[in-house]
Length: 112
Length: 112
Image (cartoon, rainbow over all chains, first blue to last red; front, side):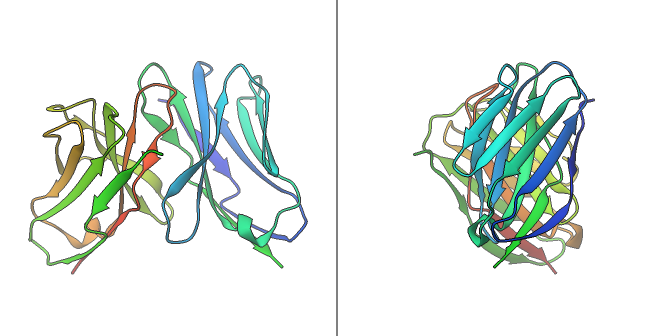
């Protein structure tokens, strides 16, 4: 079945640096992707929803790139700040049900 | 704003005891999910439901039951709790394919 591999599992950067988290998926029919953020001890909050038809999605302080040829989804944080310290999860919605296939997460630490 | 509430937020149970985790959503979403989150495993789907009266097995259903008595409520039941079920459990609701999942705040269960 569909699998999602997320890398790296841990990432430590300095404030102001960029950070990149990548997910590779296997099913070419994936329709939607999601990025969720989980702050320590908290729940998961939606960061961005990505449609398979859109290669570049931008949010506040980050960009999500979708490379369908390589089946790769990346979350790029520009100028990271300590408030970005959290776990980030990608998820793939395959098919016409709402079950998600999850990456294992990336723990990001942004040092002042 | 979508609202998913879980109870209890923290629970200590004895091995062999029965534990019920409850979830309530006010979003009128058809789909509800129970996940557990453990370090190194990310989010793993236990049970899910497409509506009142329906429950489906997820990826790791063994040792768990689920109940969906109404659109709003979805419970996870551990009939005979074991220490391996010590974890953080998240409930989520969503409307269907491509739709965002909204998560509760999590229930931390320790089985001693």
